[in-house]
Amino acid sequence: MLSLEGAPRSVKVLGVKFRVKYVDGLVNSKADALYGDCDGPGHTIRICTKLNKTPQACEATLMHEVIHAILYLTGQSELLSEDREEALVLSLENGLSKLYRRRP
Image 1 (cartoon, rainbow, N blue to C red):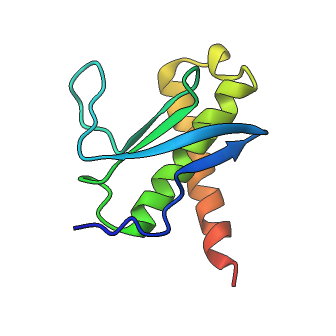
Image 2 (cartoon, one colour):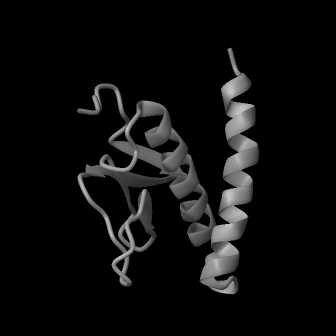
């Protein structure tokens, strides 16, 4: 079982507090399993512990969802299709996670 000791229960994104919830399962409206999701209006990020099996995977998914939150809060998500937003978020997550991992 994944230990969530020390895992963040909230994050501040551009000064806005988002709750972080860890859930066993998560699906979208098409019944596709999700690693995480961001509810911008509800200021909530959910992380699926069934798919994210390590603390590092949870951290990567949290970073991914924080990027979605940034796009929501800045109004950019309204300008992007769902597919384009996801492609942008994946690109930023990939680049930022490599930078983040280099820190001592």
